[in-house]
Amino acid sequence: MLRRVLGPLAATALAVVSPVHALAATRIAVLTFAPLSGDLPNGAGDKAADLLATELKSVSQLEVVPRPRKVEGLARDRLKAAKAQLAAARDALTKRHPKDAQTAYETALIGFRQALPALDDFQDLIDCTAELGALEFRRGNDDAGRAHLLEAMRLASGKPLAIVAQAPSFAPVADALAKSVATLPKGSIRVDSTPEGAEVYVDGQDAGKAPVLIRDLPAGPQYLRAVLPSGELWGAVADVAPSDVPQHLRAQSGAEGPAAEINAQLAENRIDPGAATAASQAAKASEAALVVFGALHRTPDGLALDAFLYDTGKKQISRLARVAFDNEMLDAGLQMDKLVSEIQTRLGTPGSELRLPARVAEDRVAEGTLASEYRFGGAGANDLSDAPPPQPEGNTRRVVVHGSSGP
Image 1: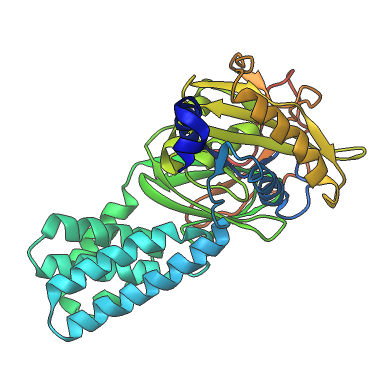
Image 2: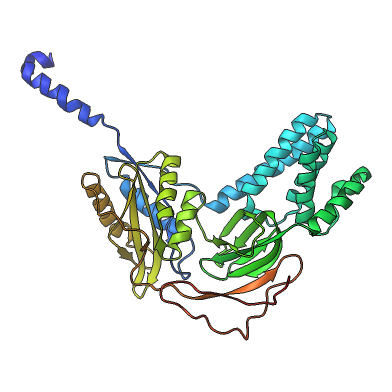
């Protein structure tokens, strides 16, 4: 009927126009914004990202990727699941199902590692690792069993393993492994935090407040977690290599995976070429064509957001206009509209590619920092009351490490 009334020409026009409405929207992901200064409100990076994502949903050409849950919430869920798997492994052993027990132990161990931010008691992780090692020995997998028992003994820091007390037959193996732990080559890790002052723990031991240089770490996986001054949680597994050059990590809120890599750079007020790689990985993980990331810092009038747009098609990062809002973010929604309009414009017209490396906020200068020193296995952080003040060198961060030196 419609074709007869409108005629063939109009019907043809309808056929041409209709597919336009069926075009797929461009997927866009908004990452948690990094804290560029340590005096931001708790969860400010997540809140600002949520506000921008909400405003972007009003744009018909865009499909906004769901924002991930906060790190600490995910960690607590993972910890609960890991404990359930540990219980299932023990139950399978009781019922004489060693293969099922090993699968459950391995799943639990992965879960404990993923739950590091919420892991304030390492005993379950130690017991899980040791029990898995003992089971592997019983099943004839001596090399794997030895590796897991060695890791459990290292985590236990000299305390006896419950599995050895329960199965005296493992005592000779435990004695030999104890000597191996003492002779493992050593490495070091420097942990910074944004904001500074996070309580840092390594393998469950209190290493003091960030920034801290942790020395004499046995080579291999090290379990690090931190509680930020805001109460937010962070965790990471670091593979320590025997070296005099410390590995650098940064404890910060609200990001994991590729987003954490980007935010670690942003927190230092810089963007390196590696940020493009991490942004590409974040885009791939969320199947997004565009990724927005950036950093927040406090100004005399409130908060400022320096944001950036990564375009997977062009493989480039471009700078978005800075927006500012009050400390409580009451007017942030209105300000985010400006970013939304600019992003809309970029859908048809590419922005100027950012030359890397670049600074995040041109009006901020990186500060020098002092690091306390912690020797793993007993010695605590050194008193810095007589330490000289940091000496900034331009826009770089100079690290002055204090503490006794030793072999």
